Amino acid sequence: MHANIAEGNGRESLRDRARFLTIAWGSLLEVEALLVEAAADRRVAPLVAPCQPHARHTGRLLAGLRRSIRTSGRAS
Image: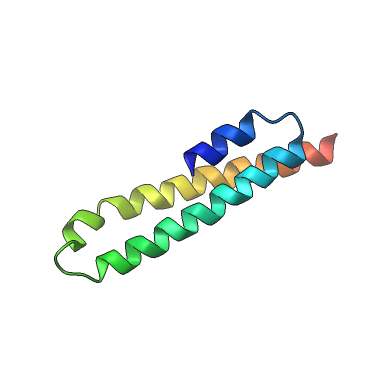
C-alpha cells in the first residue's frame, strides 16, 4: 500500500496519481479484511486488535489524499 502511494506520487499526471491511490485503497481494504479474519482466531486476536485502529486511520488519510487529487483535477 505505501509503495503504491509512493509510486503514484512520483507520477506527473493527476490521473496516474489517482490510479495508484486507487490501487492503494484496494490494498487497504484487503488488509482490513485479513485483520477481521485474523481477529476471529482467538490465538492471534490480541495481536490484531491494536492494528485495526491504525488501518482505519490510514484509510482516513488515504481518503483525504484521494479527495485532494480529485479536487486538484477539477481545478485544472
